[in-house]
Length: 191
Image (cartoon, rainbow, N blue to C red; front, side, top):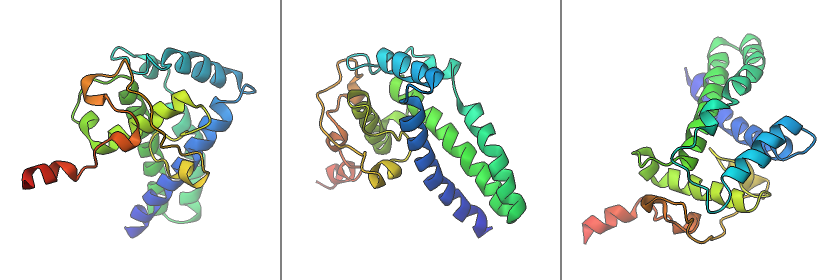
């Protein structure tokens, strides 16, 4: 059973590096015309600074690549399970599915804020601000779910930005460092 937990952790690391590679070297590469056009020419244009947030954004729901990402990884996951054991195979499949679903969920909620419980969490706000920096500088912050690969590959940026004009009140921030740490709300009650 511990195989499953360790494999899920390994798939988070793999997912971070795969997400960064795919975002940087496929979606931002003109050689991959379809991916480039959908991502840079459509998504980045529609969510440019001043239009980063759109509560009516249906782009992700209609044109999600989640099924393709999962199906593309499935043979690899099955092979790992066949070569090792059932728990590791189940962990690779579960970890892959969890990562691609997390990517789609987080990315959609970043651009289409609806003030849900998830969007008030500290981690979500940090991920939101990191992704907002990516829309200002396309060479930074390729990761949406887990910025580990951006940090290791030195493409992580924590720069401060102005407040996004399209931001709803609960997301009027100026960058990742402007998000109050989760322990500050506890300190308010201790006074």
